[in-house]
Length: 364
Image 1 (cartoon, rainbow, N blue to C red):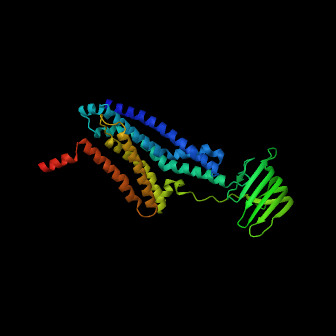
Image 2 (image 1 turned 120 degrees about the vertical axis):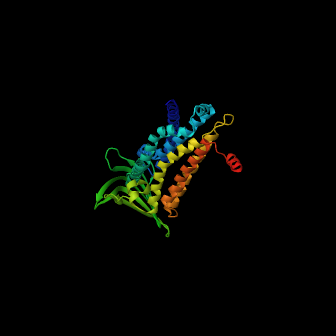
Image 3 (image 1 turned 30 degrees about the vertical axis):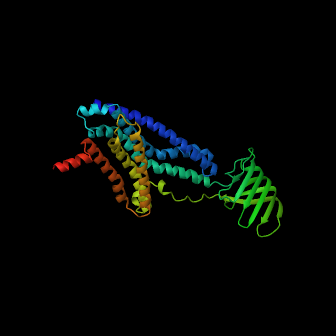
């Protein structure tokens, strides 16, 4: 009981500290990335915190898996370094006996990772996509901020308005620069208002001037108008785009046999299986020589984590391209990693080595 409780308490402390640090780093990176998307016009500035929150929520399976792996390696490495492992081994505890308290501590975390990967991951991606689609489907006038030059959604127009706060849907001092394949126009007006005619949204410009230049003809056409209308969109909502593969539910992926859907399903299941493999690997590779450096095992663990996830990404692309089946990929990567971790654990538990095996073979 003392053996199990002492290990789980230290694992909890290490896991909590690592999780806080990783979430802080990821939130900072996602905030910078989301602000960049808002500056490019892909995300509404008012939705920056929502998009960042959903993005971090979608990345939580990876964060929790890395935190669990780092906590396992750092805790066991400290026990080796402070000679606590020697005491436990001398009291009759073998290396494999450490697997039980590790799994007792990590199974709730594994359950959370599986839930996040199979249910929360597609939900968070769906929310992000819906926010982006809603912002992209807004009319050009709705996208304009008062006192700022703003490009339209398709990149063919540049707007500037001085919005009148007294009346909604009206603006003063309007400037519109439009670029077409063979024509460029510049329109300015004293005021503008929005109207709906025959199911189309129109901007009616009042008391303005229009300059039109044809690229393949010389000259400039100048027109003055009392009222001029231009279409900016339709009142009927545009049909929603098909949900991306990452936004589809896990049950939908199970019912579809397309390679791309199988690849996404293998990725989600792989996130859940990776946590178990990293616990076994963490126990197998956590060995520290007190006379050597303290960060060797942790650096090797981070390298193994990066390599494992890169293999998952490569395998996902292979499955999506139809070069490999999802079952074969999961057995090769996740099953092979589990077998390798258990083999290393058994070798260290029984003090097997190539030299001892060779000496035993010669003696036989």
